[in-house]
Image (cartoon, rainbow, N blue to C red; front, side, top):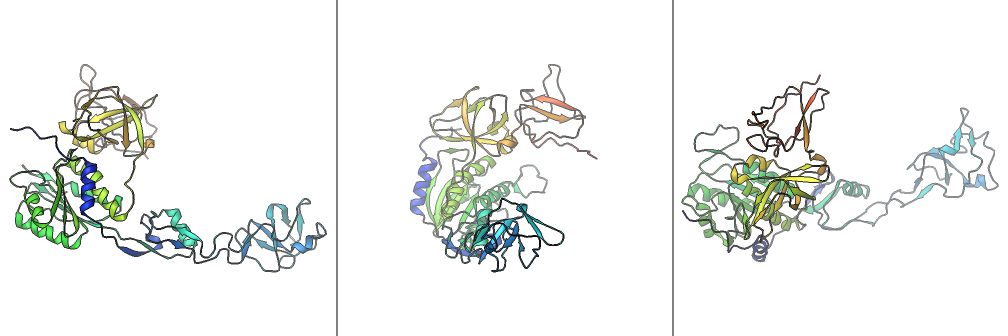
Length: 470
């Protein structure tokens, strides 16, 4: 059996540059309600259509008064009455034009008979504690510029500016076609030779986070006519077509040959692994991507290729994750000619962060999928040794990172062998939080059980606890 070819492929950057030179995105605008604009890309400059306050308003909680009553100093207020000499005016309130100033309520003590006792050191002038018309926002004032990704606070500004319908970039529709006769849908018990199709749920959710709409097709068996029917339907209705599986050269890999008959293949095989066989093509003016089938490969291809396509259609930058520097606690492999995706689990230590490599090539796929960090190895790198400092992209916030010692509720027994090494099917480092039930707990150092199936390197959500809190 021949060895895998690992050299001579274009980098991800080169592949995207070449692809974007051959494909120009077709962008469209749509109008959405104010309630639906958050997370969307604005397509026009927007300006306020209203003035606030319309006339004027109180700048504080207090009483509105006539400044002329204070021309000669503090007036006698023992006989003052509401709606005659003053009127209540709280923050943001308009008040009758009879009054032109506001005294803070902390300085004006309203008595039970309606009279007022004023602090002796107050000074009142025309406009005291009064917001003039347009002091909050004025007609024609710029609100947001085209290309802005709308946030909740932006939506509030648009609302304040009298905007109720928002022009935004139309979301691209991405069709996802899972292929393979070995695949069965989620919820079915796989038989010998079958695999559960799990890429659709991962890829479509990732695409939606990037700003796309998605349409997942039913599983297409390894049949050329069925594949072509699904592909042509997707090409007719979607802005981007993703075929999952069948990207490598094999006896049942109809996908590559079919795509070549419908469009122009820009690149096939990229210097990125897992997922080297990824194909990038253009058909009917639309991106067609053949995404490799293995889950980690599909994740990787989605992050660098599909995200770039969606963000180019929306005309916004690629997402950036929070990064940290961590010390490797386990070695990791790499290839000098390939940008390798590495998944890591990061824990807190007294001095910083420690990183444990999840080797999906040796069966740790579940650990890799549920890990909390990743890294792309730079070209030229051959390996990483224990104790090296590396930069990692976090897949969750630092507030979710567990410490090197994790607590479990009492009553959860962990099996250990005669050498005090943990054994059994349990994995340890993905536990997202200790259970604060008030019960006694057992501490488990994160470096416990470095051998066997209980690897404290990988506490995962696989451990199920029954929480009997009353």
